[in-house]
Image (tube, rainbow over all chains, first blue to last red; front, side, top):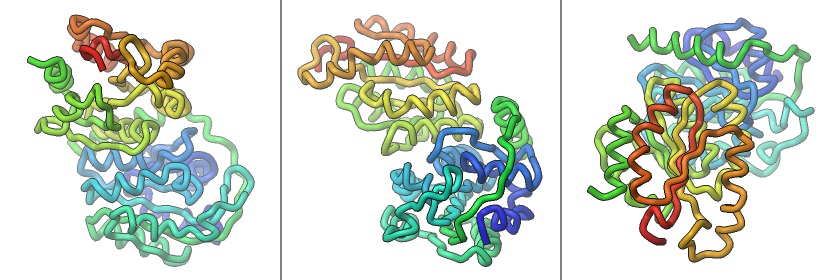
Length: 187
Length: 165
């Protein structure tokens, strides 16, 4: 399956949690599946989904799922060392690894070549690293959340995109409603 | 009280509970103070744009953040400052070592110093330059201004402020 199909299988889990979603098509696909206040869509800033999500997980107790891509993680590879060296057992990094830069036209990434992000994550000190195929992604995500342990999931899927409109919700609205929902959950 | 202790105390007094840092000799005393203080969660980052991402998350999670960095990294933070911190309207105090200013011993640092204020000005980031130790008296007010305005705010601290490099 391609990323949009994978996200569709994850949606029944994602809708119940606080999610930071990567720039471009991943956010547009999640938005299309069902816009929710507990979703923080990144409208820019490639590479920082894992970092924003980790800052959230470090600062409050709700489970945070950061959806990232292999190409985006490659632009911010140091994030895996930060994740591997700090404690936040309410954090799940779900890397959609389709071996390509999807939003820019499916140019190949090094993760689709010789580079294993799962091995990099392990070498960075991340103790719970799960490699899985697209059909196993939903079960892996649920298991990671249930484990209440910081987990990095590298989920392989096919390269490919569907055509979707950009998200035109004001960024301050996205941020404000996300913060309000999170604060309410922690109240 | 040392100037580093004063800056750390001002961070704590302004309920700043999450600080990310990259190493710096001039800001070493502040970084050490942040690391030791029980009221602050110190999460070192590998690169400043990563750190700003962590700060964005921490603030949305309910903790006031700050980043401690050098001016040499302004360039790698431009996209993050404008498309994350400013676009989503988030506060971010940036306590910055102003390398390449008066009393700087390393000539290469000057090359970035001459662009520092122009870049911050272009980004419409309120910027304060601490040159004398007494300038630190404004730090508390600057932090309050930052969280009131929900903007990134830069505090440049040069070698003269630190009593020489």
